Image (cartoon, rainbow, N blue to C red; front, top):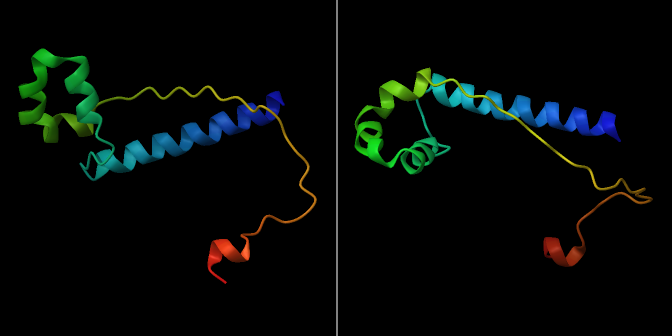
Length: 88
């Protein structure tokens, strides 16, 4: 289980880091990170609002992931949607 948990954590971390990197490269804060900064630093709210386009691409993020796998289960049949779910 430890191996699977570590693999899962590494995979999630890579995905989050790649998402942030792409957002910064495109200067597109589609994750709403500015809102977290405004909440954490309310006195700098106006500063962030006015300068976010310049600040966002240069911010360094430290991504930390802690995951837990509660259990693994054997699936004997492939997972498919029921006819009712797909409208048949």
